[in-house]
Length: 518
Image 1 (cartoon, rainbow, N blue to C red):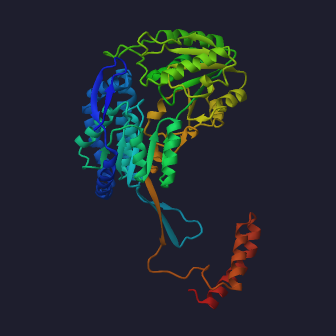
Image 2 (image 1 turned 90 degrees about the vertical axis):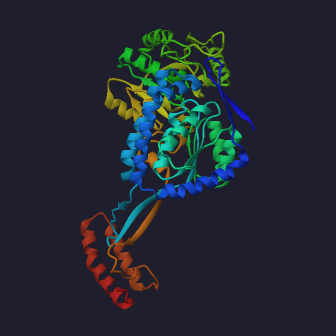
Image 3 (image 1 turned 90 degrees about the horizontal axis):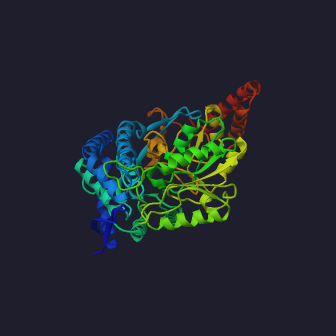
């Protein structure tokens, strides 16, 4: 039996050794999930929503130990573990407990032409879903998907990141403690091969959050079995700072947007586009604020930035910084690792020739921000869109109507005006990207619909009255003329419509008489 070692990235301390899930056991795990889902899917939406409230109670009761575990295993400050993971999770439970029964009940479609018939949309669970989650938000990201999957009536097989397995297992524990029936949620532990094997067992749908490279592999594996996927991938998110912006506000937004979770966020502000008129003062203020950030282990909340969680990411930082410098970039601050190599000093790079380098085009996923300038609104939009990612963008300005016009031209899933990053944690708002940032949505009503199939039911409005449809066999000349006259009712002029109506009515009556369709 192989094991995973969970380590504290701030100290290197081994938190726990965890046995991995044998790949050969997945068939039994899926079988149990399918049986459990049949029962869970039959439970009423109201009862499943009540379960979310019970789970919320357990979450709040266990909050302190969860905050401590997230901080130790992921490395982020305890405040971020609470404010960016636990509180949004409690809010998600509240939102979906309230909204799911209404959103997922049967909905009637208003009929325009076929008034004698009725159509309903019926939502039913996908079945068994596989959720494969990352390490940077090891609680919130998988928990949100699990909550939506469960309230929609699905069973879940959940694979947490091999970097943060203890947090993943703790999610399983609190769901069990809240009274979830056995095997509705099962957590499997392992590395990439286990994730690939999950897909080979043909789940109803795969929900993956992670890198673009791995997302492509997930999609390729799912395509072999025609398994649908929801992909939330990387970002290279731009902030546009307009010339009228309050610079203290704008630099504080850029500071938190780029450095929260030590920049290890897909929605992190990595590209900052500053109007050339304010660039010098903006850089001066932001540089000073970056240099005041405190790095270190999260002890009693006395730090702002935790360590770099993923070892292999550190070489990407070095490569991107060195490439930018070779293109004439100025390293305003940072760029160096601490002696123990666990922390990268908050880094700010500026320069006009960096826009086609990797520090400006490829995801950094660390405490690094790059600044360039723009002269006009059109140039800012063009530069912001000049990237293969499309997750989030931000605009900082006093002119909100102008920002709204700009937002509608940005090729991203979310635009925040005078805010950064945080809407990824809101239950009410959809989250997801375009282009290489993936597709599908999570959170909100749109996200909930990702976890269900849609069944359309079409039926007579009155059960006791029916007649043969006018387009059934046998075809006749009267039938053709009647339908051709009917087509004229779609003309724009009411005069033209009224002219044809008597002829249409007469032909319709003749057709019904001759063919005895009544």
